[in-house]
Image 1: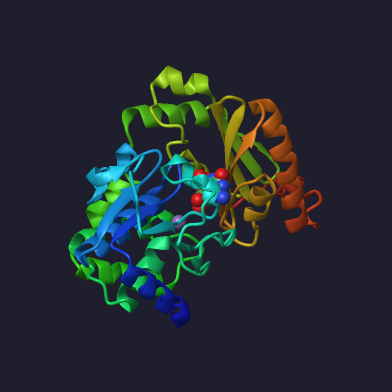
Image 2: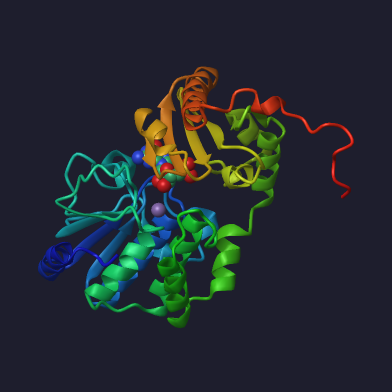
Length: 340
Ligand code: 5GP
Ligand code: MN
């Protein structure tokens, strides 16, 4: 679907009036947040603007190879003529990089839970990544799409689609991948860096979570505690992408990851099979996300948060499959198993 031409015109006008531009995204940034901030910043910079890129938590080690990441500031100093927030559904998630109370000029995002908090809101939930919207916008505004900008945007596209394989994938997104390759982005290397490379500490951290994996019916979950993080020396506050590994468990509707954050807070991530919308639960807990991938940071101790979240998740799964009674107990009569 093409971008709304009125919104494109509004953005073009604001960009023409601005010289010093701040581009930011959310705390604990993922590949789409990093790729979108950097791709958009690089394109605007190539168009002659003075651009500052900001991320409250900086660029995670796994994305430091993305062009432009060395120029990201955690506490950018203004003043700025224009503030643009990308890939962030809630202004409070921007963190201290930019005071959330003030409405940013432009909010560009693909989360269905976006709160439309900008003066201009370009929100396209059909887009598989914010990087996809930005690639369309760069083309619509006739801005330069350099090799570096293409590499950053392809990183965002790969990260949010887990390498073009999520259930929301579209032919358009696949074509965009090819377009970005034609601009010089190196798909195999960006794929490896974004999705197929983990630190030694991250894999040991996975071991802690995998060792505690539990399931009830079609819901599986595990947790990572502060003790786990300390024991393996994992430096981040995230789950080191363990949730994507958990979502490969067969015959499960929903997987949940609990990551203890200290100060009585827990980061929760949900992933679901098509047809089960976990963004609703995330929103109810003060977070947000997509139908098949959502998250929230919830106040409370680990055990208490687990109990509340599991109860809400079992209820959602039950709604999705009201007629499943007893399904878990169906067994194949002996002697009828196929020879494998
Ligand atoms: P993850 O579980 O990998 O952190 O995030 C999954 C999706 O949910 C991402 O699109 C992410 O931006 C969104 N998300 C995760 N945590 C939060 C949160 O606390 N608030 C909001 N609004 N969105 C979140
Ligand atoms: Mn995204």
